[in-house]
Length: 476
Image (cartoon, rainbow, N blue to C red; front, top):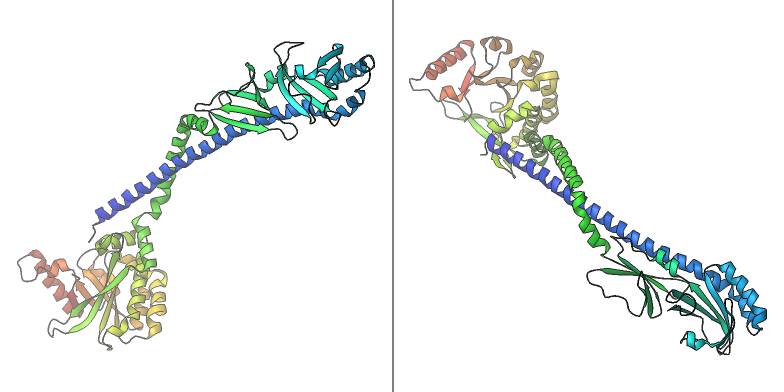
């Protein structure tokens, strides 16, 4: 059977394992939550950056789209007539560098230069076009080398006539595409197959990616895309994790400490006893009581044994003292009474047959023992003789003598178990007037020897005969 030291050691080890697991799970969970939070924050910052750039460019281009109805009727008018309205309209838009009128594929009027006679294909090879076009290119006339957006709105079915608006995006792109490390290391504007890079101007191809990620967001109104390049939300979150480690360690230690406090009762031996009662792990065994002269079995003493599926068989010397210490001895005794009465049919149906049940002195308080016997024992009207064996482990001061008298009235016999040890006193024999004295095995084992205990045993037997008590040996 398991020893108390080994069982307590196992419970402490299990408790330590639980607390360690709780602490490790908290550490992992905290770092995971911080990783996810940091990753989401990085992704949100990247999306916000791209959304802002797209919205700002949309705000620049939308007025051009809504104002084209004012400009299209000017196509065909002499430049001397159309230039003033063009200049006024360009001034109102602010971001527009120039507005140009094209007829039959010839740019013939500019809001800046006035009358001109330049084929539009020389300025933009993609024009003229039957469809509206947004083009990204470099200025070669006014501010040479600066990036510009060219918006083309055709007015004729063949696409030879139309309005060409040139937008200066040099300053705007410098603000919108400025990197924001560490999340964003580079940003670009893509229109068609041309790209505007921050501090690099217009190029035909985007730089190749190494270990970086590229996020792209396209406008819902115009054919352009904002591309954002950076390490990636997850990679940045991983790099940021070491800064979260101190907080995670503190939280894990705190949770481990709280788990240690919380498991103080739930992972204790007393808690295990409660679980064992609920799971019916306690088993009853019978120790026969033999008549020394006839060698006939005149009764049994009910013994409680614990078959713990987690620890194996546990000795009563281990769990009984702990049960008494944590006020669990009464529920254990109640379990013994209830189980014994259910198994009474296995015993001889004779009033001379004794069934002994060990009861602690604390069970006598407030009439608890009487209530339990009335509920479980007397309600079944057993024929066998019930013997309540009062253990001397508890102080006999707890015994309510009114309960003892009531037990005598109900025909229950009282025995003092392990007499000669514990809290025994001759004065209690007079007060309790037990029917049986059960001599402790430490004395009975000395019978027939020269040991001092043998003499004490003789004295106890003589005392029992003098007071007319029955005497018997203790449990083995």
